[in-house]
Length: 232
Image 1 (cartoon, rainbow, N blue to C red):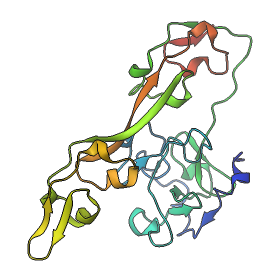
Image 2: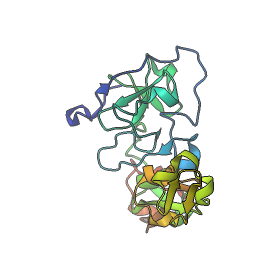
Image 3: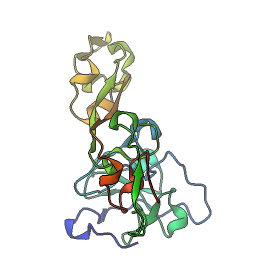
Image 4: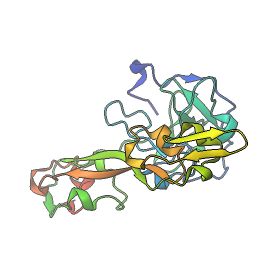
């Protein structure tokens, strides 16, 4: 699959840690590279990435990485780190990739764009409100008039339950012979997915906000991306 993002220099893989699992192997539908709506669709410690601008791993399960924190250490030999600092699933063919993705020219699984639709059809129906889109299986950012607002949600577990992540949890401090003490900050005070997801009890998730466009105002190409609208 040809990727339109090669000029960005973000998809050239740094230090592939092995190749794919091999044709015919079972692909985890919640693993690295899988399509997702929210982080709850991804197996821990992965999160659902959102990149509505460059569309690099947009709405795919991934994890942060760099030379000091390679993907393969925790995610297996089929995972590798790209220049964007995110883990991807490597592949030799489309058979190695999760549903909704394909093996691109750089040999990692990238989300597939929907096929073009006939422009002879007209869009009709009643558009579903943005807030009701989450959970329908439709990407909020693909719906005209709607956008995903990401934040940290949940209730943090006590400092004593944070384990090895104690030092990265706001409000917690590790003391020798005492352990992790303090009072953790509320989840909504975290502004980044990494510190949010490393705090036990918190998760990086989104709300779908905005006002959807009326079905009759949508083109045939985007009509069915809006729940409630259809072509006829």
